[in-house]
Image 1: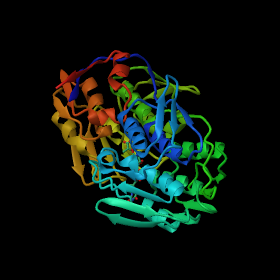
Image 2: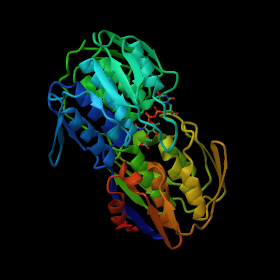
Image 3: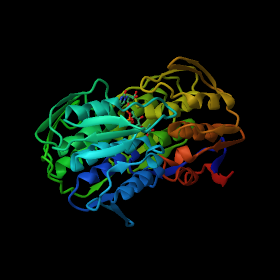
Image 4: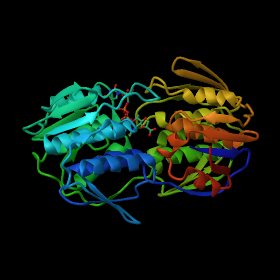
Amino acid sequence: MDYLKIKGTKALGGTIDISGAKNASLPLIAMTILAKNKVNISNLPHVVDIKTLLKLLANLGAHCTFLDDKTIVDTSSITNTKATYDIVKTMRASILVLGPILARFGHCEVSLPGGCAIGQRPIDLHLKALEQMGARIEIRAGYIEATAPNGLQGGEIIFDKITVTGTANVVMAAALAHGETTIINAAREPEVVQLCEVLQNSGIEIEGIGTAVLKIQGTAGELIDIKDFSIIPDRIEAGTYLCAGAITKSTLTLTNVEAKHLGAVLAKLEEMGNSFTITDTTITIHPAKIIKPVRIVTQEYPAFPTDMQAQFMALATQADGVSIIEEKLFENRFMHVSELQRMGADITLNGHTATVNGVTQLSGTDVMATDLRASSALVLAGLIAEGETNVHRIYHLDRGYDALEKKLQEVGADIQRLKE
Ligand code: EPZ
């Protein structure tokens, strides 16, 4: 297994290019199951989760062609409608193929995703919505067995909780359903917005894009001629590198980034004393000389994203004062805390709330990544810790960050990828 060796306390400087968004790519790749044509996708990030989903599609019978500037996905040859445990267990977002396969073929078997480090991650809301659209769903031997022999029917879906992939699943199912589907309490994340926009550009009538109420006119089973598209920038990758600039007190410029997707993150970084120069495609961070403490509550978009919680926890260890971070979406998303404490961070947990006593000089040591965003928090801590930090189990990191160590090396970080 690989690990990252980081020598801390080096100032950084320069430009980092942001890759395509993992969490936009996943539903958009699943969406190709609805296409009558070969779909051209550009700006896909080179991360493991994307490779995993493309492998799942290939297992179903789809063909993917990788060119320098785009990936061509042809799902016309899909014959198999079973997403098996061996793949689904490695990536829960595989559940995103359920809606499209069911809508197109009238039957689908998807392995239940199983547990996840950050929380139980149920999919009850996905299943309830599809049943409301006429699907018959049974759970048998660890698999979801869904059938809709006469196709899915449009209807009114009210989500008890806002669910990002749940909304994406229902949007894709509704696109091929009979009649109109209204989704109430829909997720508004930019990744869901792009899915809706690509479908709309391909002829699907969708109202309310970017709002909590979506109205989708289905094609009654007619496949869609999906127009070419380019994946939006990854706002969480961008937020992570902004935190790298803030924690090392370095001026960094991010390119190919969409600042409007980072409103809550930029606002919190400003509260902590940082300032920014922003253009249509770039963000430059001008770091605080003294990092101010902050109060964060994670919520659905456009509020502060849970996927940035761990990174801000690392940053808060360097703030001049006490920060309070409350995690409201997932029940177990504080596993980076014990690793940060081993580096000397002064953090107290009380249920879903972390109290971070700042201005501790962290010390490098061996730490273990536990999940995707926790991994990046440990890298950020390593950048400012005295001595060497070795971040182990970075297969978690590779799921969602495209060439992280190369991007940090290019702005001066002393970070290497080595073999255990
Ligand atoms: C998406 O996960 C993201 N993943 C996650 O990013 C992100 O943390 C999460 O949204 C929240 O923003 C992808 O987009 C691939 P949810 P998702 O359904 O869709 C509960 C990363 O780091 N819930 O919005 O699985 C659930 O338990 C990953 O890139 C139900 O109760 O999250 C959670 O408490 C981690 N029943 C809340 O809703 C359901 O059927 C939000 O979950 C579905 C969800």
